[in-house]
Amino acid sequence: MRDFDLLSVLLRALTLGLEMLTIGGVAYLLLAAIPGAAGEAGLRACWRGLRWAAIGLAITEAAYVAVDSAILVGNSALNPKDLVTAPYFLAGMAALLGASAIALCTHSSGRKSQYFLAPCAAMVLLAVVYTSHSVSRMEGRLALGALTAAHQLGASIWIGAMPFLLISLKRAADPEEGKRLLRRFSPMALGGAATLLLGGAGLAWFYLGVSSDKSLSGLYGTAYGVMLLSKVYLVAVVLTMGAGNFFLVRRIETAPVDLLMRLRRFGEAEIGLAFTAVLAAASMTSQPPAVDLPNDRASIAEIIARFTPVVPRMTSPEFAELAPTVPLQEVVKQAQFGGSKAVDDANDRAWSEYNHHWSGVVVLAAGLFALLSRLPSKHGLSFRWARNWPLVFAGLAVFILLRADPECWPLGPRPFWASFTAPDVLQHRLYSLLILAFAAFEWGIQTGRMHSRWAARVFPLLCAAGGALLLTHNHTIGNVKEELLAEMSHTPIALLGATAGWSRWLELRLPGERESRFASYIWPVCLMLVGLVLLNYRES
Image 1 (cartoon, helix red, strand yellow):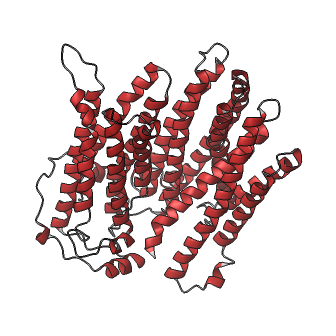
Image 2: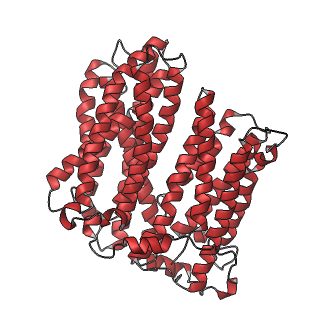
Image 3: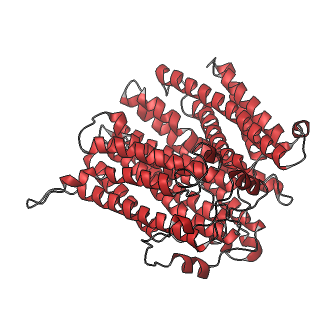
């Protein structure tokens, strides 16, 4: 039943994200959007947004419990009746009930309804904390649970409340209403950020095992540590943008008239990157903490040896030289019992490296052409032809579809639809569709064939979504170190992809020419860096 693992991680991420939105919406309505600060239009929209967030959380919790139950039943001799008393099941039901109660309260935005919001939100928070690593431990359970609650509460009242602020700002009757809301939200967000950082620092200190082995090898030598570094990077970027917004709010009375628009645009990117961090957090929950893996950690020397630049592999072995294809049902059986696919053959590794290296050439070229297309024409030298750079990605999509999974259609014997039951194959096919979609839309935008604002947003959204999805990519190799080193190759690509997507979003959305022009140079450089990472990819 390992086929459900990817779905479980995605549902966990969706649960955490909707929990943030629900608790953040409650905090925003109780602390910031109070009568007198927010107008009626903004309040109605926020209550409506909170209702949908709570309903979404209830539905997602039900799906998450159902998928985890299927995994447990498939991997053990437990009966469905045994699961009803399991802690994860009880916690899921508690979160579902709390979210449902919040949704019911939103049908009446009066003061009596507000009295029930805080205890219901606390119920949701405690239920989600109860399914975290902290409660499953034998030692320090209470302290770790408190740190986890602080970490998630801080994220909720900072990031989770921000969409409701943007809703209010969009519906503000006049600039003064927007300024009032910003003045109330700013200290609330500052307190949330501080709470998030303090809780996260305490959890990282324990889960990395710094206090026990007096080293930081858990940070760089385990998959948990790699995901933690990813989360730190994303939170650092969000904090940087949030700090800029904080200083803008401090000079709100003398700032330009487009201040509210700038804050809204940066807030959109902050939310997107923050929810990518939520996906990294969900991936962390599927990994054992570093403190529980004292052995099989990758050393600094092994990491340097793997990532020392080498000449890319530009030639591929013949398809007939690859290891014999394992029947699909055998792959499912091996995955179910923790086995690995038979892909350890040298020719299989060479095939994979060839694919990655040529993909790197394509992405590097696309980033370079995109950068050239943004340079002003001087001395009769024009790079207008470089605006066609998205067409390069169309070729990459076809390349991935044909070669990413040689055991599947069209090269291998496994049928097209049946191969989708393997999670890694499913992800590769999704990447092909994402790449092809944003290549088509972005080519139309870059060449002036399309003028729709929604069409222009396809590339940044799909690029950011692809980077976020890559954080869940898992290599079932059977060797802990090899899995970690493979993950180290894909994680930078995921982070650069998310950064590229949201910088392109800012380029399109920011009102100021200077800010949008600066953002226009970030994402092509990110694409070029992705290409360089792919060019240095190795399987061993």
